[in-house]
Image 1: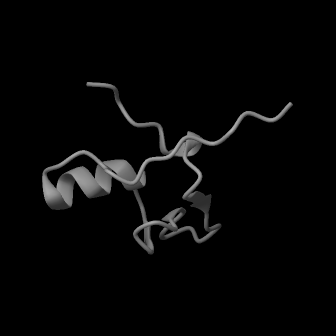
Image 2: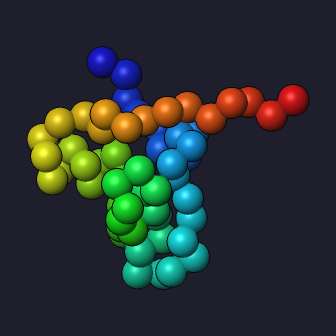
Image 3: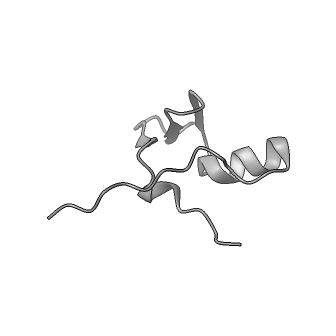
Length: 57
């Protein structure tokens, strides 16, 4: 199984809030830790919403 890198996901964003610096638009939450880890900790499953960003040319 491949480890998910949220920073390469279209739904990931930086919130710039020191208490919750990571955000996920797919699930609609902000977190202190990377969203894929938060999803794994909460549900016990790998994030099913991951969609890799298209590379910039």
